[in-house]
Image 1: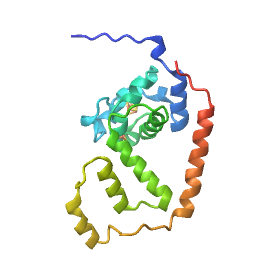
Image 2 (image 1 turned 180 degrees about the vertical axis):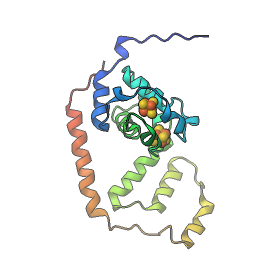
Image 3 (image 1 turned 180 degrees about the horizontal axis):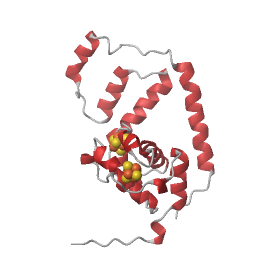
Image 4 (image 1 turned 90 degrees about the vertical axis):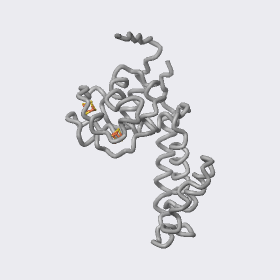
Length: 197
Ligand code: SF4
Ligand code: SF4
């Protein structure tokens, strides 16, 4: 049975699409829906919206549907789609821009453990300059209430020197300016008028 979809004018957010294009450096109109990105994506089977469908939704201006999708959080940034695209669309960069916008717009994330992991990871990089795995595991397991997740792997990782007891602070000097630049870019974006219609 054919299902009819109707699109209301107020659902379309052209300025948000411009923002996605600005953040990712891509032109969403370049996609001609060949589907190669979805065919090669290793996570496609778990996504609620296929990568080429994300592109189509963006082209017609339905950015809210895209920001609410599980797909943008399940994307592993592997860049297979980017490599395969015959139109040289960097879809991985678009996914990244969409995740940033979803966070900035306060969109409810259907994959909250992914956001929690990302935020904890970045907080540790900001604090120490490098990720401190022990703290990351502790915070993630506590925050997701899965206290003993992967606990049996810890002894092996200790023996192989993959888990340290103390954070490595060597990268702190170089990471600080990166976070400052990101904050600056974010506040200049907030200053721009975003079409909320
Ligand atoms: S591979 Fe490129 S052109 Fe083809 S559907 Fe995906 S983004 Fe569009
Ligand atoms: S970057 Fe994301 S969308 Fe592209 S192939 Fe990898 S997981 Fe799929």
